[in-house]
Length: 609
Image (cartoon, rainbow, N blue to C red):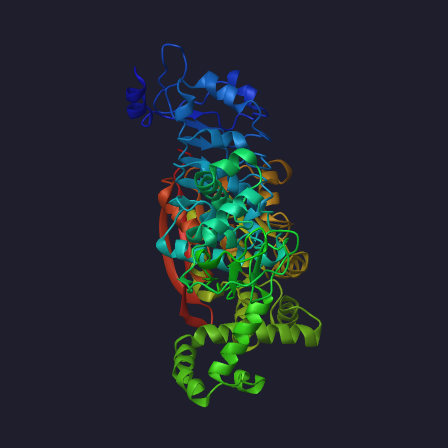
């Protein structure tokens, strides 16, 4: 099979799958057998694979040393590798070896330990890269993470399993202009005043003073930019071949200045001394070097003897050219001040016209009316909560537990939940699940009757009590909370409701650290029901961790709260597009704010593949 036929067929070939093989170094690929799928991988006569996809996810790779050698031993055409999956390894950087595969279009690097956001710059050389994943790395926590990647790789169409829209690109471009400053280029201002002028050889000067049409070249002999050096040298060789033969190195820099206007021939006048190159009615700059007048002045060229050459000498007037010097800026500012009148005072600059303020009043009123529910939520959850925390010295969850202790019946989960709802509605907004979502959660738990349930995000324990009430006899619930102070309040509330540690076990820690230890340390081999109620931006990462550690059996139910407000778009996009979940969305509103739409996503896991 020729190379073109290979390109047409290998895209449809199944991948070479080395996932979940505990591979530490890439050389182990040569001794490991790939996983078998529904379709076998086709091989060439040499025994190498014909595929363009290589999956190395869920291993323990720390670097990609000898990756090129291993790939060349596995694939018939390694240069056409188009899909590399290195997710859920221990890579701390993006190895430059990945940039050698110029046909690479899909690269998965999520779930690693990449520390620096600048590592993304290495992938800018891949012209065909269209899909990239980097979530689940420490760089995801950096400010402007998504915008920086889209600015660096503007040609990708999918990032972190989420399509890149036109609005994303516009936002990234605006972010780039605001946060990434262009490299400063130091410009030498007023270079003609500070640079030394090249000494004009006598043979060049004699020819210049004898040819009236070349007088302006004499005034223009100075130190030019690099772009005009070759042009100046060529012009000098054409005009003065004799002088070039005598001293080829003397005229290194020639600036081609063409005057915009020429004055009539000036009257001859004796020069100041035989050593003078020329005389002028304006002051001259420099000494011992080739001199030229200040801009805007006139000059007359003298002969070597110090006398004027008569009618053959023309007076040249150079047009003033603005330069970014300090004196030029000062003069321009003075001229602008005289032309436009006195500058406005500080009081005039800082005062806004009442007419302008009134023009913005309808816009402000419209925004307040339209988003009044969000402003109320902001005031209750941020401003009033912060003020009460400072005044009381207690956190809101601790104040809520004190209210429950004095108003609820111990051992009655239903009465404790009702007390918390009353506290949230009439005292302080609790940001909990609320009764509407609580009914949906309890109904789903009763339908599924899970033997083992997992909750990520205990918070004050409201949703924990809902799940524990609906568990079948002998059911077990593991709940994870990252904040120790909040976890202490939640555990008191759970024990007050009458659930012991065998029924509800509270784990304090970050979800990405606890999930890998669930099987070994907490003896959780499978989670029939999972509730994601912590940070929506962590939903996708934790769901993929659960998949990677095989904690989701076929038919497991995954519930995710707050998928519409504040929202988890990447999580929903992944669940709908990966093909392993059946999705359903239960629309509700926020507790005490029904106008703010929210919902609970229900995912049914169909299996790993």
